[in-house]
Image 1 (cartoon, rainbow, N blue to C red):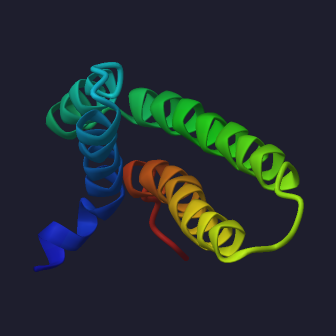
Image 2: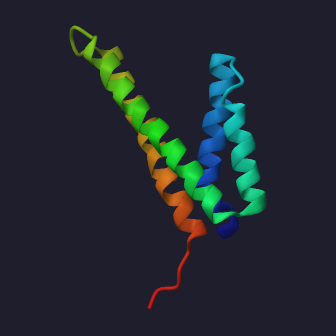
Image 3: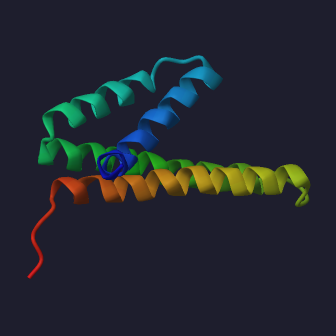
Length: 111
């Protein structure tokens, strides 16, 4: 169980990418699946940091895109709140996973 939990940030990225492939029917997120799989196999610190930075910036960009879409609603309807809650939960979880992923690979002993 502890080993499965240690790969939680990577699982968030893979599940999100697979969900995006199913919903949007595009294969660009397949690149994220391949890169995260390579990261799991290689366990390279620099690669983990670069991948986390890229995914974190994409998550931050998507938060701004969500705010832009929310500003187009004339009133705060049920659809507004559904988009607000689901969008923020999704993109904030991606940003949190992007922060936690390199911490796992740069695990330093504490004094």
